[in-house]
Length: 113
Image (cartoon, rainbow, N blue to C red; front, side, top):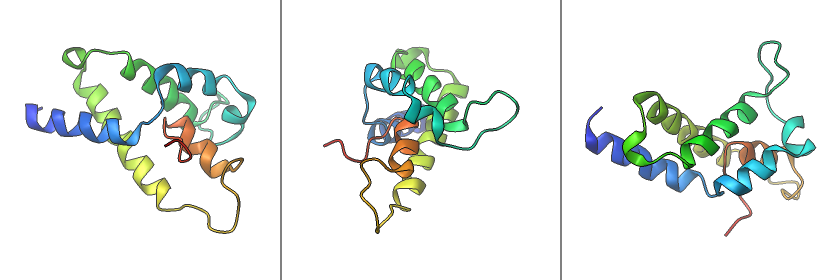
């Protein structure tokens, strides 16, 4: 992958993920985190929760150690966060919403300044 592409992916991932590795890891341990998202296969873990665990690893990985697979996941995270933010519910308080909890599984807390 070209260096410019990798730099852009890392930049977009950094914009999408506004939680620290510690914040995300703590969040992923909550019941709320595990109750949202689409479950695939028989694992009982949602796609977003699984992604959140991967994001924690990515946040702790030095940029020179990122693989193409890591960069592909970072691109996926950015795309998910952008699409999900566009679907913000208008009729409800988002603080305790499944919408916010799903985003938080992907490393983005829409209420965080």
